[in-house]
Length: 424
Image 1 (cartoon, rainbow, N blue to C red):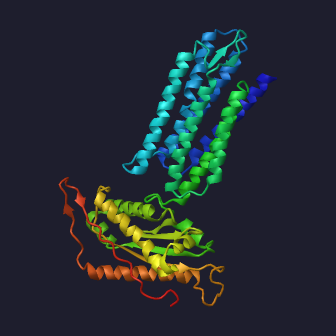
Image 2 (image 1 turned 90 degrees about the horizontal axis):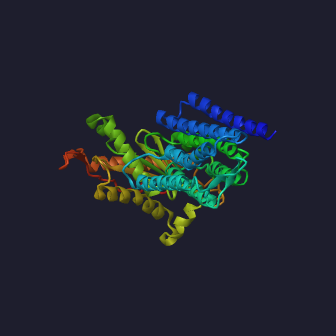
C-alpha cells in the first residue's frame, strides 16, 4: 500500500510538470530564452522525481548499498541546483549596478552548490548526511541539518534575486510570490520529516504553476523595451485613482530626429536610457510608465503626496511638484557625468504636471478638477515646455565623437515651467 501511495504521488507530480510543459509549448508571451529556462527547470524536476522514485523502489530489494548511496547522494547533490535554475529565469546579465548585485547573488548560489557537493561526496560513505541501514532503508545523519541550512540559503538567495527583479518591473503580486516561497520551504520540511513519502516533489511540482503565473503577470504588465509599466497598466490604474496625487507627463525632445539621423536601434537605446533614469528618479515615490513612443508618465503612489507636501516649505503644492520633477533632471545629469551609458545623444526632456485631489482632501466637486482634465493639463504643460526647448535649441546639437570612437551626446534637460494656475 505504501508503494502504491508513493507511486501515485510521484505520478501526480509528473502530471503537474507535464501540464507546465504543455503550457510552455503554447506560450507566445515569454521569450524563447525564457521558455528554454523554464523547460530546463521542468526537466530537472522530472528527473529528480524519477530518481527519487527509483531509489524508493530499489529499497525494497536486496540491492547493493553502494548503488543506493550513489543514487541518493546524487539526488542530494543536485537539490540546491533547483533554486539556481529558478534564479536563472530572472537573471539577465547587463552592465549596471542592479545586474552586479544579481551577479553576486548568483555567485553565492554557485558557492552553496559547490559546498553542498563537496560535503555530500565527503560524507557519502561515512553516513554523516544520510546512511542506508541494514534493512536498506534511507536514514538521516547528523549533518542533515547542515544540508537543510544550505537549501534554505539557496532559497533566500533566490528570493533576493526575485525581489530585485520584481522591484525593477514594479510587480504587485507579492502574495503569489509569497505562496511560491512558502511551498518551497514546505517541501524542505516535508523532505526532512517524511523522507520516504515523496511529498517534497509534489510540493515543488505544485509550486511551478505559481511561478509561471507570477512571471506571466510581470511580462504582461511591463513594456518589453524599457521595462517600465506599459500603457495597459496605465489605463487600468487611472480608473482606480481615488487619492491625491501628481501626474507627470514626460516627452523626449527631437526624438524623431534621433531615429531619422542615427537609426531606430540608437533610438531604442536612447529610450532605454531615459527609462532607466525615470525609474531611478521616480520609482521610489511613483509608478513609472511608458505610454507610447517617446512618451512616459509617472503617477505618485498612495500616501506619497502627503509625505512630500509635509517636507515642502509652506506646504506649497506647486513648488512641491516642480521640485519633484527636478529629480529626473538631476538623475540624467548624474548619469551623464558618471559616463554610465554607452551612448549619449543630444536631447532634452520636457515634463509637465497636473495635481489631482481626492474627494477627502477637496470635497467640493465643482472646484475639484476632474482626473481627465488633470491629465490634459499635465500634457499641455509638457508640450509648452517642449516648445520652449525648441526655441532655446533651434539647431539640434551635433554628435561628438569620443576618444573611444563612440557617439557621445550631452544631455540638455529643459527646465519645467508653470504656465498657469492649477485651477485655471
